[in-house]
Amino acid sequence: MTAAFSTQKKLSLKIDAPLYSFLEKQADETGIGLNDFIAQLLTNAMDDWCEYCETLRRLSSEEDMPRHVCLK
Image (cartoon, rainbow, N blue to C red; front, side):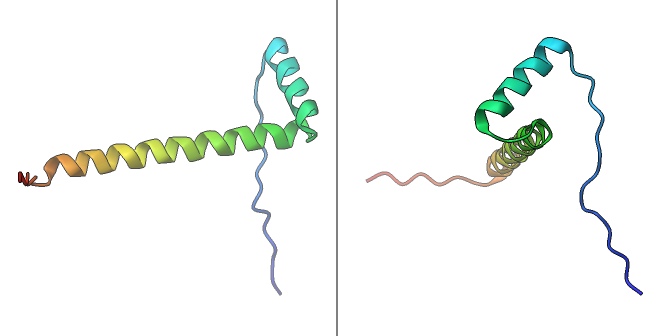
Protein backbone atom coordinates (compact mmCIF):
# COMPACT_ATOMS: atom_id res chain seq x y z
CA MET A 1 0.00 0.00 0.00
CA THR A 2 1.35 3.43 -0.89
CA ALA A 3 0.30 6.76 0.48
CA ALA A 4 0.21 9.96 -1.52
CA PHE A 5 1.14 13.10 0.37
CA SER A 6 0.23 16.54 -0.90
CA THR A 7 3.15 18.88 -1.49
CA GLN A 8 0.90 21.85 -0.85
CA LYS A 9 0.25 23.24 2.60
CA LYS A 10 -2.35 25.74 3.73
CA LEU A 11 -1.36 29.09 5.15
CA SER A 12 -3.62 31.57 6.86
CA LEU A 13 -2.77 35.25 6.38
CA LYS A 14 -4.21 38.29 8.09
CA ILE A 15 -4.46 40.99 5.42
CA ASP A 16 -6.06 44.36 5.98
CA ALA A 17 -8.97 45.31 3.70
CA PRO A 18 -7.13 47.84 1.47
CA LEU A 19 -4.27 45.43 0.77
CA TYR A 20 -6.71 42.58 0.17
CA SER A 21 -8.61 44.71 -2.35
CA PHE A 22 -5.37 45.66 -4.08
CA LEU A 23 -4.22 42.03 -4.30
CA GLU A 24 -7.63 40.97 -5.56
CA LYS A 25 -7.50 43.62 -8.28
CA GLN A 26 -3.97 42.64 -9.31
CA ALA A 27 -4.89 38.95 -9.44
CA ASP A 28 -7.93 39.76 -11.57
CA GLU A 29 -5.82 41.82 -13.96
CA THR A 30 -3.34 38.97 -14.40
CA GLY A 31 -6.15 36.49 -14.95
CA ILE A 32 -5.32 34.12 -12.13
CA GLY A 33 -7.05 33.38 -8.85
CA LEU A 34 -6.18 35.30 -5.71
CA ASN A 35 -4.69 32.28 -3.93
CA ASP A 36 -2.48 31.46 -6.92
CA PHE A 37 -1.47 35.12 -7.25
CA ILE A 38 -0.41 35.32 -3.59
CA ALA A 39 1.42 31.99 -3.86
CA GLN A 40 3.27 33.33 -6.90
CA LEU A 41 4.22 36.52 -5.03
CA LEU A 42 5.51 34.50 -2.08
CA THR A 43 7.48 32.18 -4.37
CA ASN A 44 9.07 35.12 -6.18
CA ALA A 45 9.92 36.79 -2.88
CA MET A 46 11.55 33.60 -1.57
CA ASP A 47 13.53 33.16 -4.81
CA ASP A 48 14.75 36.77 -4.55
CA TRP A 49 15.63 36.27 -0.87
CA CYS A 50 17.61 33.11 -1.61
CA GLU A 51 19.46 34.87 -4.43
CA TYR A 52 20.27 37.76 -2.09
CA CYS A 53 21.59 35.39 0.59
CA GLU A 54 23.68 33.50 -1.98
CA THR A 55 25.16 36.79 -3.23
CA LEU A 56 26.08 37.79 0.33
CA ARG A 57 27.63 34.35 0.90
CA ARG A 58 29.72 34.64 -2.28
CA LEU A 59 30.84 38.18 -1.42
CA SER A 60 31.77 37.07 2.07
CA SER A 61 33.82 34.13 0.81
CA GLU A 62 35.50 36.31 -1.84
CA GLU A 63 36.72 38.67 0.89
CA ASP A 64 38.64 35.76 2.42
CA MET A 65 40.29 34.84 -0.89
CA PRO A 66 43.71 36.30 -1.73
CA ARG A 67 43.68 38.74 -4.60
CA HIS A 68 46.28 39.19 -7.32
CA VAL A 69 46.59 42.29 -9.39
CA CYS A 70 48.31 42.09 -12.74
CA LEU A 71 49.56 45.35 -14.22
CA LYS A 72 50.93 45.56 -17.75
